[in-house]
Image 1 (cartoon, rainbow, N blue to C red):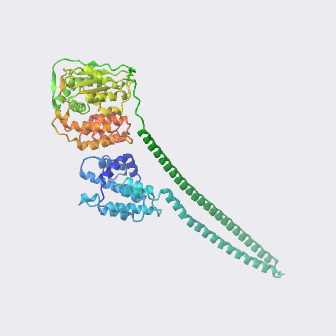
Image 2 (spheres, rainbow, N blue to C red):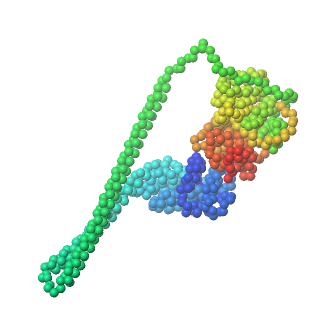
Image 3 (cartoon, one colour):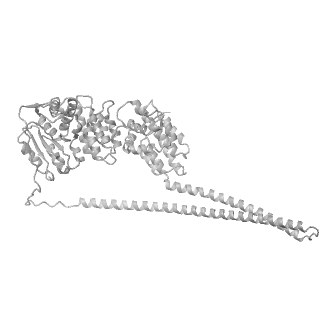
Length: 632
């Protein structure tokens, strides 16, 4: 028999559940079954293949292989088989009272064929519905409950159709099943106590007969004429009879006490059973009342919302503002200062290769080693073309921002330092346009220094308007001090955040003159004719951006995917991969801002490998080390 592989819809549902909930589901399988899992789970380094201690790591490795994009098909197939094995083991353990469960599961496996994969996704649907319909029916026989059926469906490798969800939700709930089970046991217990009472009554009757016979014996002895000859023999006989009567009386008293205790215990248990039944009935009634009240409240709220929407549709036109009231800014605008650090020839940069080469040369003059400078130059150029905004953080953040601006915009560069407490950015686009002057369509650049001296909410809209309506790029630096604000997710809506302290800096840089250039265009297709193949990893990037339990930002997803796809046009080497670069500029800062658990970060970054089989991005590795996240 063939084990069914998870459908794409099932994989997406399981990925949404998250690793923690999936591992919790795995851990609900008993240790006895876990030992059998050693034969199907993927192996991990540092453990023997038959070591039970390796199970937690091997379960995590199973999830990594199950959700990993690409990779060997054989590993993917083994991971899918192992997941189905776990799911079936859970079902057989938690639905042990269901009749014919193994037969129903075998029927699903028999309906799955490897020879016709185009049919395999639909062929077992009838058998799957038969399984959950049988569970639904047996829930009313108290063999299972709605909550267990729903959990089985939630973690199943099958597509959750409306029919399956209806069968799970309409099954008998756990409260009702427990109530019926308690009631079904009561008659047996009562019958057991009644049988014990009948047995005691029979023993008492037998003892009463013995006492009656002894009494007759005593009466017959007393009625006899007293023998003259042997008084001592009569005295001994009477003493023996008296002893026997005393022993019988004690036995009857003991049996009576035992019967009393059994009767009292029976009465107590019957009263407890009656109380339990009363409590269950009250709980069920209370549950029905609360459900009815909540439904009534929801209907009331819905009616209120409909009424408010109708009122909004009838609203009158807004009052026109008075034109004679002057608007006075509460604080001054940013001060724009031309950045003219050097004079000389300006080279027109018409291709991405020329622009990345000049950036690499100037970064090397700042002290970046050649191996890391070329990779970083391609990432910076991609961010400028695809996003028009990027953020540098670290001890060389401002220097890198200025050098990048002078390299790509030459004479048309201005800088502005954000002062502590600055709140007004309404005229920033006009101030930049005035400071740059007439550019005749040339690319301009704004170096925005210490941008986190104020909350970025005050600058985000003005920055977005500036790069949207003009041929201008913004290079911002993030400061680190007691007056600065923490990095915000809003930054990633506009562009990446590069932590420059983890780049490969030289302690003794060679002094060299900085070259100046000017981009002829901010269009990626004009700068490079190389086609992009980044769409293949776009879904994986979006999945990793949504790793947080309650986080989704479509603006960040759109900007990050545009960056990664554009990077495919400019990248000249195979390593690092585009997804590793996106992890450096987007995923790492986002996960730190949203406080993602360290173990989840390590699992996704895989020690710096991300999606690469052999190449480890040392920047990601160093970021994890600085944050105290140890690679597993």
